[in-house]
Every structure is written in C-alpha cells, then in structure tokens.
Length: 169
Image 1 (cartoon, rainbow, N blue to C red):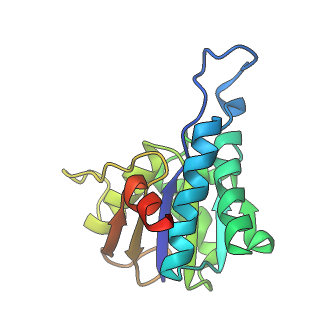
Image 2 (spheres, rainbow, N blue to C red):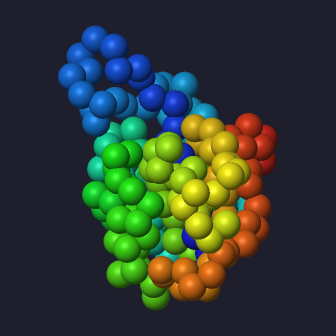
Image 3 (cartoon, rainbow, N blue to C red):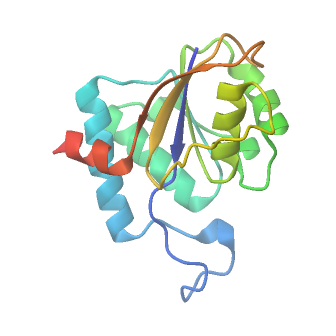
C-alpha cells in the first residue's frame, strides 16, 4: 500500500476577524491558488488515489476538495475524525485499518500529527529521533505492507509544495 501524507494549504491565522475556533480556519486566497498549482503537478505526474481521507477542519477539507476536484476524484473523498490535529498516531493508524483494501491512500491533515505518523511509519517506532518537515501543501509517499504496519515502511519520495507547484506550471 502507498500511503500519501499531505499537509493542508496556507490558512488564515487564528486571530483573523470572524474566526471563532481553530476548526473554522479556511485557506487563504494565496493558499487556494498554490494548492491548485500543486495538484496540477500531481496530475502531471499521473498520481491518483483510491481514497482521499481528510480531517474535518475547514482548511484540510478545502485542501482535500481541491485535490479531489482537480483529479476528478470527488467520489473518493471521505472525512475522518482521526485526522484532527489532537489525535494520536495510534488512533489514526487504528482508524485507517478499515481502508486496508486500498492501494493508494491520501491523508490530508495537520502537523504535528502527520509528521509523527510519517516518522512512525518509516522508523517503525513512535519515539523516532528524526522527523520529516512536512510544509503546508507538501506531500510524501510511504510504502507500507499493511495497516497496521507489521514493520517499518519505506519513504518512496517527498515533494515540497514549491516542487509540486513547479511541476504544475
């Protein structure tokens, strides 16, 4: 299985007028524009997903919708509460077991959860001494044997948001 981890795009700050909670923070116009270009880069690479799972928070949901709409995968989009920022690696990995029949699974969420999940999947332990710095709009692909993984996975590739945008033209 290929597990793709994508951090949400650039969002408004928590102190923005009209934003009453962290969950309401939406993508900025710049964030939307950059995500659209980045996803065009994914399309150019021929990357597709069997399922797109997103955090229910607005900024992640908007990011996932841009991916789904641009790649023509709107019917593959599913919101799961395990991708909210306060969740643990264990809870997320456990929640993903119901998607073990998928070959290419995209998770759209937040840091530090995604960084912690990547470290766990690659190192095979939760207290790994290294971290992948997943920037807003960045994407990595980790190959794992199953969910939950029996052993450490393999980092296949990592693309920064700038690299994705360049690919998108």
